[in-house]
Image: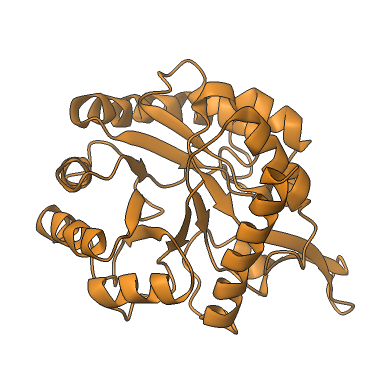
Length: 286
């Protein structure tokens, strides 16, 4: 399993600087965010992403995943095909799209049916360009807030075209048993989002405990069990570290666009990479 750095909090870095930072922090590669305000975005992605991949290759880094903006859920939007074409040209095998939402009062199954119709359009681009569309689990009122909900969305699609992207930090908040969730996903499993989380005491808040993301090992995720299950299954896909630290519920539920940089970002990102490598090494030694 390769460990890659999600670039969401490194927007000020050039492509080359991002690669240097990933190396400095101990990562095998990058999960590149193609989003507004980032060096690579939908207006330049067709030219910029293949060029960036050549830079990272010279730096001996991988890029197993591109991450689109969280509102990319309409396959007919004019920018969507360019994302797939750019990934294909760059040799990036996966594209993570945005999130479909549930609003109070919605008919859940109608929302699912509508999302699945749109997912068919993304699946067609996956087939055309050979790029797997990935959908990430996200706690809160998102379609696919746990493995069961994710399978409502993607079950029946070809796993070659549609991949599951579980995230144990979110699953700790809205999930199910690790083994049961991974069993639900089965052959769709493609990439793992790496976050840790807990319920933080806030006495002046109602209720007095709120979700919070923390660095690995400081939260409630049982990493030995979770990574052990992945190893036992033969999973060899990427682990993408999202570097979300000390974010409380108001930011967690924002889905993707925090306006603040996490505290101790580089220190904790480096410690996360070490934590994962040590845990995987101890599992290999068993």
